[in-house]
Image 1: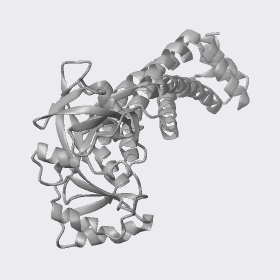
Image 2: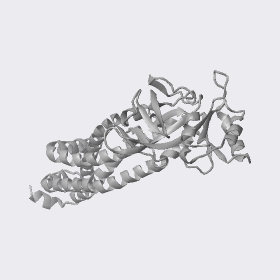
Image 3: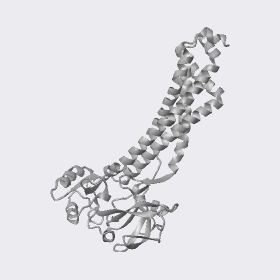
Image 4: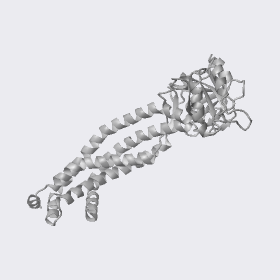
Length: 388
């Protein structure tokens, strides 16, 4: 087996140009395959990381997102009395009644507009999201027409820089702070005082209620109580579950798109590998005959040529993954299908994606080499030696 391994590897090194061109074709397919999956993984990671496992989101039943939800003040007060809500260091309940609406803003790099999330927040909102830190400026003052913006908004939209002003809700709002929420969806939001934003948008109801649990296991108690209370028309979810559901539609679309593209492109790569291997069989007919005369079996010849093709796939897979890994340094923005708002996120390479990509490249190599390998193994010894 070691002899076959080195024999196959030597033949690839002998045909450097052909090997490089065939592997390049496979590398391009693997690059596209990995890039699309990395995009979907980055989207899901961004949204899932937005939530905390110990936080509970309460929205109106059958609402797909906070944007579609509405909870009146009476129901919000009932939710606020739940004994499972944790207390903050200031002795107040860790609960935030929030409002979420969409506005359109003009982008920095083009004369186009995109939806942006405006979140009206309560005093406890920041404490419920410890991943958020202020990069510049300060928090908006209570009762003032002030806002703070996520770093993706500050860099991506006009008028969203520190000390600049945005006009929406029939008011001018001054940007007094820029915050960083890490690789989470909050970096693509604008925050302001909920008591100022609700009348500005003529919204008499909250969009959602967020609270922290005293104990992680308390969720199994508080969720059915809230959802079965006849005075309420709401549902409660762990924040991580809520944001995972927000990402499913877009991530599924990206994965289907990636699979469709790679199937089309992989056909060309497999055909290229097949042509390369058929050419190798044609040019090495006498060599194959000599190997058979020396006692190598048909199975050994078949294995040798399959190994060559698998080597091609592995080289292409590693090259494609190498270049795809640099995509992690790129941040892209797109519209979240669930909320129809702008969301900035990065490509994300995981061990699972590496395994899938390399497996896909090996499958392409096998598919491109199996028929030429069978042809090589079935060559007649006498006919092959006559060509020597």
